[in-house]
Length: 251
Ligand code: PEP
Image 1 (cartoon, rainbow, N blue to C red):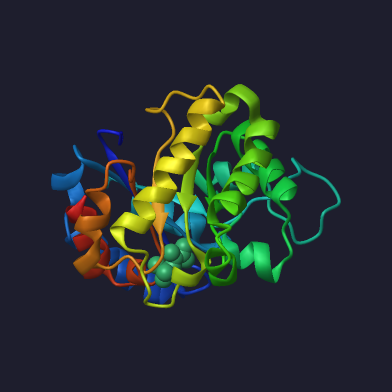
Image 2 (cartoon, helix red, strand yellow):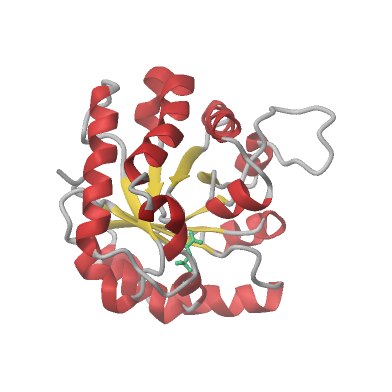
């Protein structure tokens, strides 16, 4: 079963500048997403330095803001880290944790990702926990085992608070590659993840399950129509106001 309201989240990654962001935000505000508000919540996850400006620009809109990572620590001698409280203080609502780019380029373990989710929740943010398999893992028939292992760390670490997270299934082979999982492939993994959550005593209706990986205006509607897909985590297409708005409308 899917949730009645979809969630569409943009991940700007390490793109943007103050001038480029202003242009993109102007386009998003001009796209007037208020019409889709009853059916879809919309957010953008932006680089840390831009949080304050983006929150201010979107304050009268239906769009929320998030970060793309957060520290597993609350405060202390962790040079270069940014805590959930700092992100929250700038008005952000969400924090992506465990994006595959962080898991692979920064060697983030399943347990570190779970600890980041816990820290985000403790500091008033909603973590968007990313899971997903590589192409080699999919070809070896390990998709379910990989996403179950990644999710288990979060289940074991959060306990009852698991009901307060968002999970994004992002097959690594589909991120930024133009290769989208077919609606059937995505639905199969989402149904599997939903079953893991239900087995962990989380009500099927409480955790939004987003799909991410080359979502575009022309494939969004079919993906979002799947019974266990509650929205999308959108990378490249979130940098084009017209495309992101079209994806939000497809929800
Ligand atoms: C992402 O970065 O989370 C992502 C899904 O990227 P893209 O939409 O570009 O594949």
